[in-house]
Length: 161
Image (tube, rainbow, N blue to C red; front, side, top):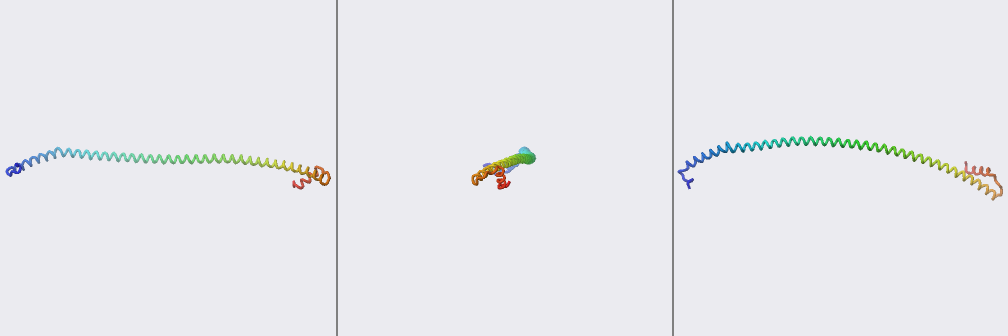
């Protein structure tokens, strides 16, 4: 094997340094700068993307804050509308209740008047019937004929008119 020949060690070492130097120069001047550019572009792209992400996050946060403010405003407007509608419904209900109460009160007073008139008529009819009955009973029991006015007076004293 020629690489183990001691007489060619110096030539092999020379060519080792020459090839190493050429490869080093190629790597240092050509390959590594391209790799560095790629790494720098990747770094710049990552930084740009992070910046865009931060901007988008800020925009999203602002949109969320705007949405929450609009939602809160809508809720308060809805609560106000509900309150107004409830007050309106309560007022309408109170007016209807008052109208029904007035109708019922009028009907009750009319019914009471009607009952009082019927009672008066019934009492008059009862008094007349009692006077007639008293006259007939007196005539049949003791055989005395009583005048209608006298019988009516007697019944009115007993009834307490």
